[in-house]
Image (cartoon, rainbow, N blue to C red):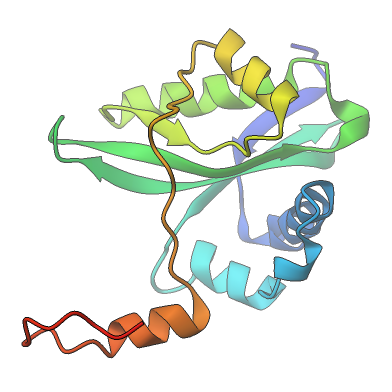
Length: 171
């Protein structure tokens, strides 16, 4: 790791930089159309009255060039808390310098400090370089697990299901 590199917990003043990195990540993943949040939302969720997630930032010569956003989860089988890494991103021009590995190591240490049973994240199946990188770091890519997601109208419909009835909700 170079002396120019610093990894630290994010502070409120970092939020606009983190949001720009989120937009860069979405562009990289060809998902820019899915970025519907705002800097203000992110500020509230990271540093507001109810904190939903945490972030670390990576600086190179004082410039924020990467971030990782994560939150607690829980393993019923381990009966231990865990950390779920939602996103880790380093600007393309700073890749292949060990920064991503250093960020994962930082989160691994944080997981151990918090007595977490595991550190987990998802990777897109087309991102072969990321998959190879994670596997080189010792991660197991679980082929038999798929992420299920309910959003927008489907989430509203799910919330309106009558939980007092045995009938299945309409599609």
